[in-house]
Image (cartoon, rainbow, N blue to C red):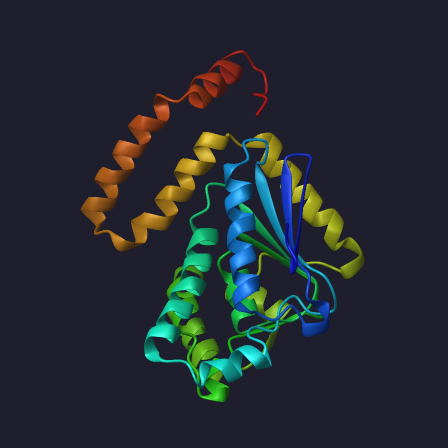
Length: 258
């Protein structure tokens, strides 16, 4: 089904693994297309509660590969716009997915690869992993990821990373708010599994879906618009089966089974 990624599901978790280790999991049009297909499959699968984005090899992702960068030089504006919109659609798809996404970062996440981590809900990384948006160092710009990064970290930290193109270690990325936890390599799989299990077993699917929807929309609203939207979503949440189930379980001093 896929050539450049591996897609697996088990225990209500879909794992999407970048599988171009010989190319440091660099982007190509095919890889982007396969990622979009895999995330769509995970979202459509009712048995899946959590998605893990992982990678094979020493690097998480090095961004665009050389062949890809060379092709950009001969593309027309229309061709480059179409390609840019494809990457934009992937980032937006992950950012707005109905289900939480965990990035398992076992190696360097650079440029577009750092963008992939940026749009995930949780980032767990090894201490050896470096993060950075290096585009300005080759005369390019981190245009698409900038939109999402400014939702994740402070404007001052974002300017530092985007304008210098420097690489930072995982510990610094955690201080900036780009990484949730820095975990030793030997403990990474266990930590990802534990987080995925917690999300799958202790949170309501409909509540997570509605919360993610709000997170993706509120930042573009005025205070009044956001408050009215929140009130509407609050009212809608009360009508869901999950809310009734959760309240019944709470009143009966039980844990709801999600």
